[in-house]
Image (cartoon, rainbow, N blue to C red; front, side, top):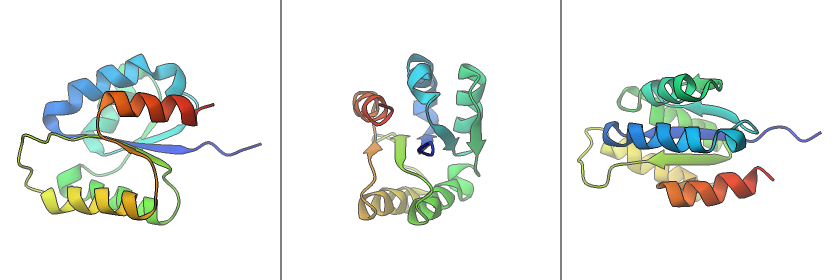
Length: 125
């Protein structure tokens, strides 16, 4: 039997509502994965969907770096990161490092709902 793939869920403050809505719409697909995410996002998704979501630290407090380390270890297979391109983030270097590590390790990374739908729905099959 194949082990469940792990998806990391991350959303900037202005995108948390969008992430929660997306997770609820894709709950049946997300059930097929092990889920993790940065602090507040993980809690919101777990509460909204009833799914277990392993919580790391908040992004600005090192959560993005924790997820990056898990990618490097091969423990995270997909990242859904609803980032806010119009809002400057105080932890912007961490955000860029996360995007860089996901690209370096060639794992799917979705930064919007349309891409997340494509990845999550095809990877779950």
